[in-house]
Amino acid sequence: MCIQLKTYSKLVFISFVCVLLLGTVFANDFTRFVGVDSQYDIKRMLVVFFICLSSLGLCFVKEVEFAKVSKATTAFLGLFFLLAIFSALYSKHPFWSMVEIANMGLLLCAFFIFSTSIKAINRDKFFLGLYLCALLFSIFTFIKYILFLLFSYADAQSFDIHGLISGYVNVRFFNQLQVMVIPLLFFPYFCQHLAKFKRFSFIIISLHWLVLLQTQARGGMLSLILASSLIALFLSKQTRQQFILTVFKTVTAGVALWLVFIIAIPHWLMESANFQIRTSSSGRVDLWLYILTYIPESLWLGYGPMSFTWAEAKPLPHAHPHNSVTQILYEYGVISCVIFMTWCVSRLYNRLDSLRQQTFPEFAPIIFGVLSGLICSLFSGVAVMPFAQLALVFLVAIMTQFDSARFYQTKLPVRAVFFLSVTALSYLLFLTYKNEDLLSALFPRIWVNGLISY
Image (cartoon, rainbow, N blue to C red; front, side, top):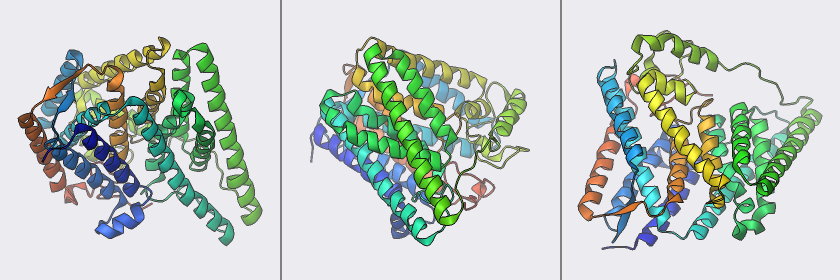
């Protein structure tokens, strides 16, 4: 039985949206339904199953084209994975290092699945669907958010930063998705055929800023502001003015909503306001200084992928340092870190330069989302959280569509090997579920074992 690539592509995106909703908006009910203990673990399972089933589906498609990776990117990936394997072999926890590498391999496979599927769909229709999905995810989230807020008002019960967002072990996992979803809501300001949705976008983006302020997501807000500033620098004068004005208006509206519904009304009903200015780094600076102190002892290859989970004498028991660059530096070494940074900066500059040349202006929200996600990874665990990882890979895959000619035909044997590889990597990850070695980790990496409830 064979299906058309376009049909397969639509099924992939429908599945992707379902996975996202089941692991976030409906995570409470779905987690209980499948009998999994943790909302974090169910996210990882959904990601792995999604990639595995999508790779299986490729075996039943008539004609499949994979993205043709440039020689520079091929060299980067080959060298990065080679150094990662060497680092793993010389680490104190080689098995767990290989598990981390296996997870990266799965994400690389997801990239090829996404890029193949995106190419098969008309660009305007794809951007419409992508925008509507971002809108749908936001609306479902805000319906529950507003209901919880009203319940708090009715019961005169105060709420903390985790109290109004459900479906996440930690509200920071939602903030990590926000910084990549909010840019997608700017499509009506860059795509003429979506201009009729501008008012909807304005309202939803403003609500997102309300949530960012209420959850005190300093890293998320800083990421969006820095990313939007970078985007604005490369836009044409007229588009830049409109973009900056829109960002300013939505932020102002979000602040106004926050002052009314999070500060004023709770103060009136409960004689207390859920507001505090956090000036500390929540231990992040201590973790980064720890890495800079200890990295000279294993400078070139690092301590091994995922090794920060068991790092000795670290100031906090976190399983990751809440910074993607220092994480790569500590776990993979200075060579891999320099290679990774050089490749990322060069790729992003090329994409930003295309905005200056007005080659693909409709891709601005995608570049905005990638930039925002990468900047947020400097303050949060975007690089290790299941849905954040997959969302970032998805946005990067969309950027490959800048050059639609860079694809090549793949035959059935290649796709069969691709599926078997994905199955093997998935099996390795599931072997580690609820492994006792993870109990000493306070915050999650692959699984949530050892996490103390919030």
